[in-house]
Image (cartoon, rainbow, N blue to C red; front, side, top):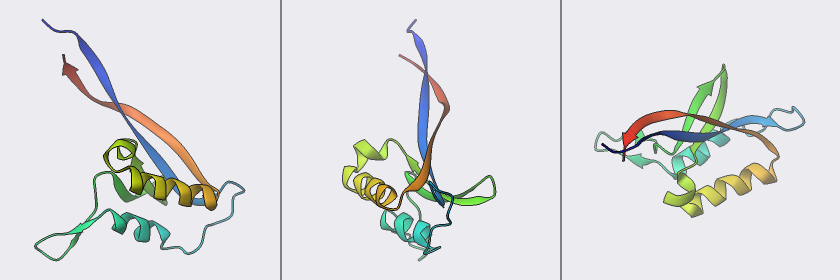
Length: 103
């Protein structure tokens, strides 16, 4: 029988607040960035990438970016991180156990 290990999934939660506590404007920046990695389905509705999504976190609108995006699409990841750095936005890493795999 193979060994089992926990796989952790890590995400960056990017807030609409700068490091010094000021609300970031424009307020629609999350939608603007998340649509860059989105597609439109046959139903003509936007389908956000699993790697870049707008989400409500603790009552605040945030951009959630899967760490795996760094390998899957480094240009988009670099663009997002450059934007975050240039605007001094609050970022925190959140990791959880995604699944248990047998190797």
